[in-house]
Length: 402
Image (cartoon, rainbow, N blue to C red; front, side, top):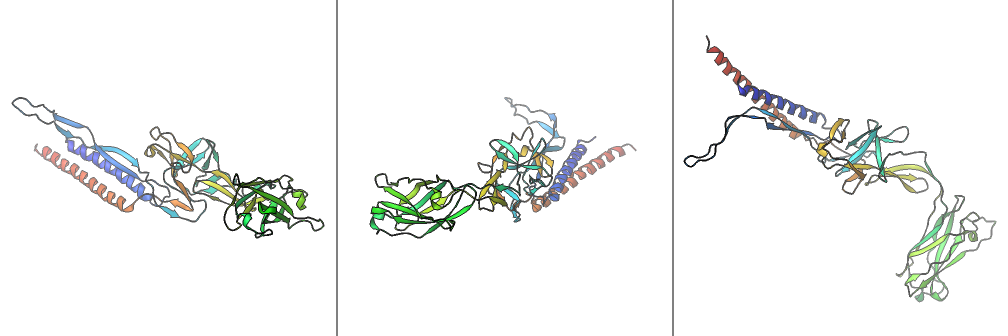
């Protein structure tokens, strides 16, 4: 039989495979996180008619004479290029800008995906559309991300007052000069909030400053006087001397911490105006009101007391050879022997960042796919012509015998 006929058959099979891949790409043109495929060809073995010969003294060398026996598929590649991001405005929609894959898990099956359309199940666990649990990375361990909408944050009593900002040199001020009153809120040991007024004024001799603290929420039946705390300034060391602790019972707070520490490390003697601020720690009891996901994958819980706590950080995986990943359906990939081991950590550190309220679109380009479809169609047709032409030649051979 003619070799050309089998070459045409191999070409038809290859172009049929290419059309299958193109059809799958077009079918997934709107699939979030989808990575398109590509087919490449190579020639198969060649039949040698005559081998090469080297040059002689009186004759030049000759090239080999070979007849090709058709083509075969060289590779079916998955193209892991970054696609554009579509804004959805939904807080649980996440897109990766840069390298990396979300880590999802179902039982002992661990998979990787670029599709970030996530949901919360009835237990508050973050899952993808197939119910696979999205993983967080914490101290080298993968864990499920659980958002407990009924979570509460216990109250923490105030134990430290941090003084920050700057104060002018009191040497050039008149005794009795004072700044505006600042209000601060502290929490006692019973989780009750108290409002205090704080006023700065030069101390005796104008060698530093002093704080006058008044409790605005004191029990009217109690007689409470303002508490004055001296803030001496050490000109030799160019810093304020650490003052004594604040006793809250002196402000009529019977259930308060009697040893509230004052921190003056960030308070400077500089400037023309009083910009000093007193920042107390501690917080009231609060319930989880909402949560959001930051650019580094941190899941931040926002509580009714104004506190923000990190509930976990999404894990991202990176591979030395992403094209070696094996597709497993559902917009997910699995490791293969040629992908390399997953290098898992949080976002950043070479793994890209997250865009909340966005989804990564398919990287299929319709104009490119339709062009490839035309070339595949014409290639298929050309190979059919090889077969029909070979058939006509065989017919002529048969007709030699009348």
